Length: 158
View 1 (cartoon, helix red, strand yellow):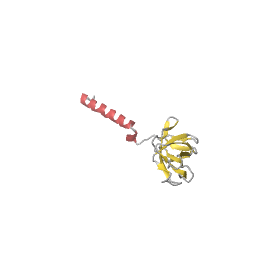
View 2 (tube, one colour):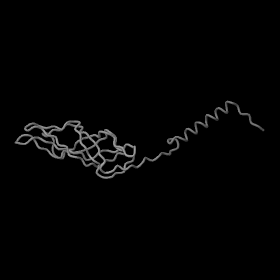
View 3 (cartoon, one colour):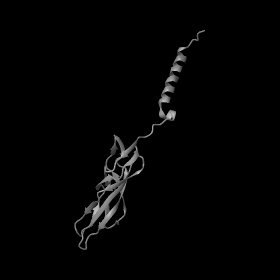
View 4 (cartoon, helix red, strand yellow):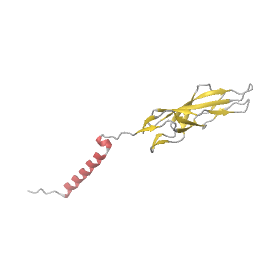
């Protein structure tokens, strides 16, 4: 015997088939997620950072921590491994206070930046020295730029 299929039953069967196919294709529905790609950020890669705070020679000490942010994306194989705006850290390397025959100077450097997977990337920076006329204080202003380089090869989940 033949079973009679109504248009209504055919429509609902087709709708269920489409819905189940759509859900199966979704990684969230199946519980299958694609792993992130492991990328190597190589030693010597240049990173530009900027100072996020003003500091002056009269109120900081050698070794004080400084807050920086990364100026532009760092990309490996077309994938961003360090995002512009990511936090970076550094420190006050040396200070020469004004007067007494000396001109004021502050030397700062940056030592790490945060990658997209949360790990800190060690950097080697070119120290930046801010100088002022003699017998006047000196300030390193917000936005002061520093250049740094990745210290060692590092694997980053991108």
